[in-house]
Every structure is written in structure tokens, then in C-alpha cells.
Length: 65
Image 1 (cartoon, rainbow, N blue to C red):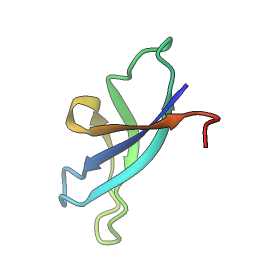
Image 2: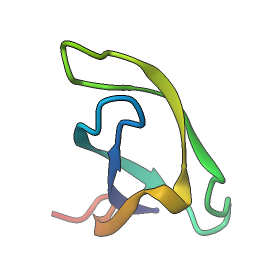
Image 3: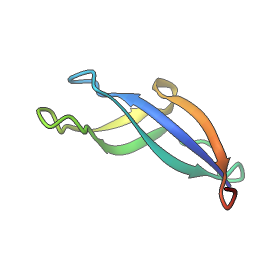
Image 4: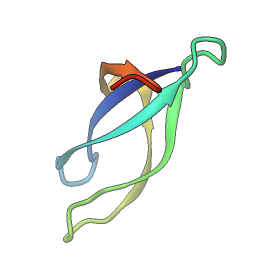
């Protein structure tokens, strides 16, 4: 399983944030990431973010250091 860093921007306030997720090639890419919550204290909106709106960078395969 490959680990990716996913960067996305809140549709309400524009705050950019990142998270890491392991994605298996066998399972395929998701169309969207569900229920992401903005980290901006003044916003905190939960939203679904389309995969195509994210910047996705491979980090490492799971289990690698």
C-alpha cells in the first residue's frame, strides 16, 4: 500500500491543509474524500472534497522507513 500526502483547500475559507492516507492500487482511487473538517478555528466546516481538487504526493509505501 502506498502512502500519500493529500493537500486540500477549504471551499469556505480557503485554508490549505494536509493529511496522509494509505491507498491501495488494488482498491483504486476514491472519487472524493468524505467528511474532511477544516482545521481553521474560525471555520471548522465539514465537507466532501473531490480527489481532483487535491494535490496528491506519494510519501512512502506502508512499512518503509
